[in-house]
Amino acid sequence: MTLAVTILQVLVGVVIILMVLFQSGKNQGLGVIGGAADTFLAKSKAKSLDAKLARATKWVGAVFIILTLVLNILSIAGV
Image (cartoon, rainbow, N blue to C red):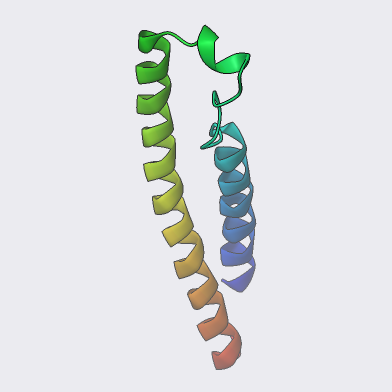
């Protein structure tokens, strides 16, 4: 049981890392050269994708925390 939860936690951790890496930075497009090239449609499309990624990252992070608590309880119980 503990091994399955540990493997699941590692997979969820890798998913969190990938989701964070795919998100654009908050200060993207603020430079003098790069900021002028963005169009309104590109910005709104990116924001909706970034919003979905941010929301999904929060949910996956919550699952990671729950798995961590479950592993802690299992280790205390000696299972």
